[in-house]
Structures are given as C-alpha cells and as structure tokens.
Length: 273
Image (tube, rainbow, N blue to C red; front, side, top):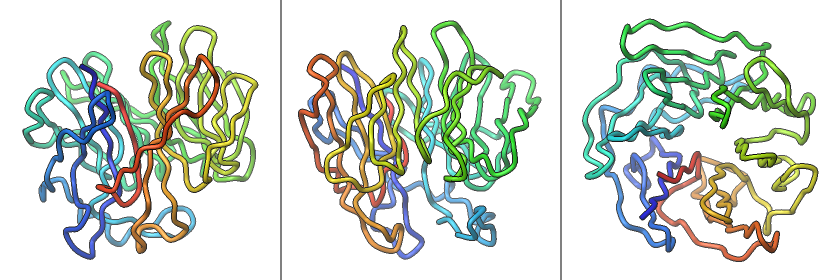
C-alpha cells in the first residue's frame, strides 16, 4: 500500500503543529504523525532572511525524499533520517546545507538539495562525503527537483515573479511557463507543474484552476490521480492555515476530491512512497 508523506511549516511560537511529517494512506486517511524532533530544529538560521527580507521558522520541515529503507526530511541546513517502515527518527545525514532549503532528491549514493536562498543545487556524494554545487542565476529561487525516466536531474526555477518560471533537464531548458511555479513531474510525454501565482495546475499546454485558490504547493502522482497541496491563508506562518489536498483525475481531467489536512500549518511538500 502506498503512503503519502506530507511536510508542513512549523512555528517557533509553541508546539502546535510541530510535526516532522504526517502519513496518509492511499484512502487519504491519517495513519501516522511523526512527533516533533528537536534535533531537526535549526536555530542557526534565526538571523537569516530570504530575498524579500522575510525570516523563516527554525523548525520548518520541507523537502522529502526516500530510498529502499529510509525517508529523508530537509529542514534548512539539516536533513533528518527516518526509518521507512517504522518512521522512527535515526539521526541527521551530515551533508552541508543552507538556509531555506526546499526540495531534496536522493538517487543512488547522491543527495541533491535545492538550495533556494543560495541559488545552487547541492550534489552530495554520500559515499565519499564530497559536495559540489550547480550554480544558478541569482535570485532564481530553485525550489523543485525531479529525476527523469531517462536518468537526468530536472529542476524548477521559480524566478520570484520577475519572469516566467523555467524548467530544466540537466542544463537544457525544456519549458518556460507560469509564474512562481512549484513542483515538476515528467512521465512519458506528459509535463505536470503548479502555477502557484495563477493558482492553476498545468498539464502540458493545458491549465486547470485549482478550486478555492490559496497557496498551492506540493504535487504527487499515483496511478491516474494527481494530489495537490493547498494552504488557505495570506499570513503564514503567523496565522494557522486551512490546509487541503485536492485530487485531480487524469482520465476525466477534473477535480474529484478535497481532503482537509488539519495537522499542519502550511503544506510544504508531499510525496508518495
């Protein structure tokens, strides 16, 4: 049975909503809550700001990746390791990191990190402990990583609304659409992303308005369904958000379900494992 792992923004104001991640089953029922792990909190980033001058909570679980045995959760400069079967916390990975890390991606012995504020993608060899970096344009806000069927690293440059978002496979730009986009899935000839500014799901050259708007981030595919994360607030993280998953059927090309996710303040990433 597939499991949907969801990370959400925490708060420094108290323990409410401070979970490492939550787990839903493929019937969209809550199955497990990974309780707050203090070692994952990153107080080293408290004086840092993003390009717009905003701080970020020291406990803000974000990117999710996994292998045969482990789940990995990014929080700024740290990556936590969790048992894939029991979800037990097993320590920190030890790779170098940066403030405001977004998605991460493990492929064989390499951990890739979207160093959003640093304008790089980290390439960390877990066998040799060597790290190199793919340099990206300043303020391009790389936020999403994906491994293609032809074994190439793909990534999204959000571009902070200054121009269209850009999508790359290795160093080749494959698309330029939308504004402030998040997430990327490539499967066969199909291209999927979230046009966050315009509150739309983009599939190839088609677009579908996500019901109720809000901030959309987090995209996962299982079978003929897409799952989209949605957070309904304009004042995150100070105001608790109403968070939902929207289900999009790829056979009918319609939204067919909406599931409330009250356990998090704001959805940061979702992944089927």
